Length: 264
Image (cartoon, rainbow, N blue to C red):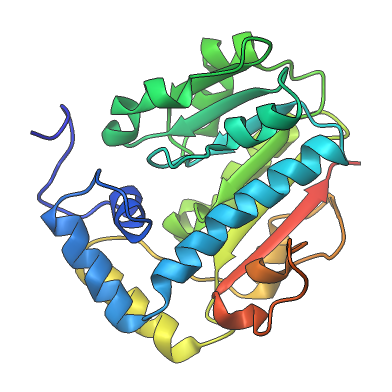
């Protein structure tokens, strides 16, 4: 039986992503959509894995090199270990993390997201990026994060779920404006730049299944960082952002842009 509030008659992006990563918190409709998208882009499972590896790399970088001890993760998705807080707290046990998502199935797994180190804290907020003011007003966020101190705001493969008419940039800027100088923003975003034919087929398959998928160009992704200072190597293919094992043979094999910026 699905958790209360979970509609299994239509696919959901978080559950499709879970299936790609080998998870079990998905249903037939999600697997069908995931398979349709793989038919459009055969290497999608690899790309999903690259996004997760980026999360781990950026968490390690921000904790080790930037001294960040607070994270606000928007569009968390179904927990996949190691979670962001596990990576960060392994390096700095006092790190605090707030996860945000609006999917009831993520809410059902929230307890797994809140198993923290004794010194740190991990919390879950059930809210929607489309209403960023509700995220910022949540008492659990205020009780967990000190917004007078730098925070890393992470949005991994999330902004693609908002159409241009949803004003994703405005929603994001509301969150960015609430964070102090020295905070960081990390984004990955699918793009049509590397393979427009395959990405076009994926968008068509997603639309047929009533899932929003909006790929964006490098210039469009760069605008999300307006006013903040991009750190090296700038906006690059996700596989090329500070890779662990040297430069990949084909960094454009995963159709995502990635970038990290600091608030002046």
